[in-house]
Image 1 (cartoon, rainbow over the protein chains, first blue to last red):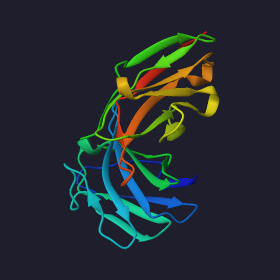
Image 2 (image 1 turned 60 degrees about the vertical axis):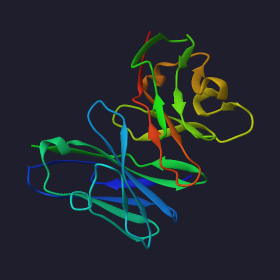
Image 3 (image 1 turned 90 degrees about the vertical axis):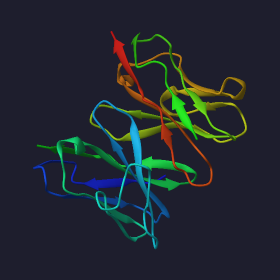
Length: 112
Length: 113
């Protein structure tokens, strides 16, 4: 298994600003993922972040809006850029370990 | 493309009663299947998973799920629910090679006394 922490746990931001979310894992992992959970909805994969390579984005998500860093095997960041109220969501980091994905507690973002 | 359908948006069950949550998937090969639970304000916790082998899998908190290939289903069951089981439950499917999961819309479970 893997224990994942995220910072911040929640934030309220003004439109047009950017927020960087941090994800820390207690063990080295190859594959990390970022998901978005919009209010009352299910999870949608934003991108896959493997250490040493560029993040791979899913359809509908672009690097300019959601830049991702993966500097080492235990850490990743997701930035939500030029935010609008539609970006209000829970953002979750997950990692693959033992053929299973484990999730962090999420970052609840509200954009005013 | 892979997809998951959870037909029940909301289920209310009495404490001590049995619970079954439905999950149907669409995937071209043998899928990896998961059930996660999300309690209010919490992240997702893995309940159980199926990769291969015995089609009845046991998970944590007294949950089990049965993989039925002929019906493309992976329904979650619990014989006797507790008030603490009130949460949102997500079924997910993914391939073995890249671990990208597709989630169902979720089923909210309410437990009444």
